[in-house]
Amino acid sequence: MQMTKILINKSFLLLAIIVMLSSVFSFQSVKAVSNSKTTEVIIHYKEKSGNTKDWNLWGWGENANGKSYEFTGEDEFGKYAKIKIDGDYNRVGFIVRTNEWEKDGGDHWVENIRDGRAEVWILSGDEKVYNSKPSSDLSIQKATIDSFNEITVTTNVPFNSKEQKIEIEGIKIKEINPFDKNGGDFTNKVKIITEQKINLKQTYKVKIENLANTNTEIGKVIRSEEFDNLFYYGGNDLGNTYTSQYTKFRVWAPTASEAKLVTYKKWSDKIGTEINMQQGEKGTWKAELKGNQKGLFYTYKVKIGDKWTEAVDPYVRAASVNGDKGAVVDLEETNPKKWKANKKPKFKNPEDAIIYELHVRDLSIQPESGIKQKGKYLGVTEKGTKGPEGVKTGLDHMKNLGVTHVQFLPIFDYASVNEENLNEPQYNWGYDPENFNVPEGSYSTNPFEPTVRITE
Image (cartoon, rainbow, N blue to C red; front, side, top):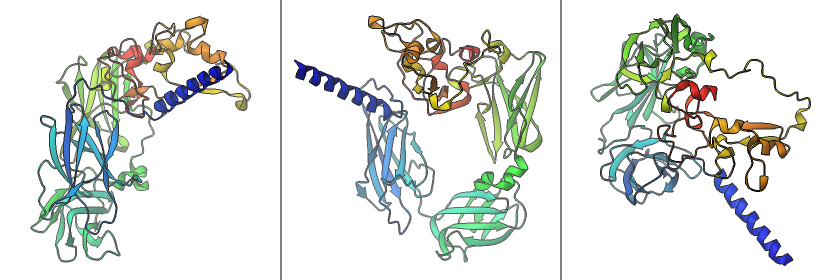
């Protein structure tokens, strides 16, 4: 009888360890697949000449877990591999990497998937995914502004940097050098030093005589001390500043040549009203709307180079469902009762802390937790709840264990949880922020109303 108890206890211990480990290593949310289809993508990869690294692919369906894929063949273009994923996906991501996670570029996305099939081509050092085989003729992959007098040009194939004439429209060149000083003049990467200071709001065209040209883009310059000295903004009014008489908007976009405020009456509106913003100090752009704008939804549009991009206000503190648009709210109205008068218990000795890492949804989601607001912020606040056999649940259980402090896993607005369909279980640890300063909507009782998630 004693041996039976020991075996049962060991079985429960093993089960607990398996459950714990499975939760620890499930970093990415898993997309539910409702059919038995498969998605297949053939990826052709042309590596740099003289490469000695053992590259492979890490591939995944959008919002799903990934796995490793080896290159299985080679043709006149280069290596190729096939990514095969269970499920019907509209987007498939992949990374070229080694087993030690050295990467050739960042995340690549395949979006031209038809009937579960796609074929794409990529070049080493080129972020673009080609839907047809790219030409082997010399072309410029990118030209990045890396300091206020330095542009780095990368080409798809090596060329003679001394013999080929290179020019930049709108600015004079002081000197051109191979990026790798020990690699000789025959290279696919050169560093251009300019005579004048580069204007980050201007787009320059880099030309290699009779062969290729491209526009410059912002590079390492934004991580330089000189950039910080010119554009660091220390004000506290980024985002929207609400009063009942007016609302002010300010966004930091020092590399933009134009900026617009786009307003929407409803979160679901597809077309908004565009309002030109005025250039402010230290790379900021600003606008002001008269009257009470509470409940207004908005985004920003900025022009960088020759491209317009619309995005959510990165400083916004309230947002629409799924965080697609910012919202103007009166933050004073979101304060719970006794918010300002609230006092936390005194704590004298840090070494006495017993800290529990907690997931908002997990605390209450168990069907027999006795907590009414399962998986919600409000579920964390319920007191006196009990499970089977009268065991305390929720924070009461934490306190009963002797826990003194709770550290929450991320509760900012997640990118990969669909807040419009909360009937479908969606587990996420939250390491994929959509809006850093907005609470996650799926934990609120009404993600469609921007103030509810804040108050709760």
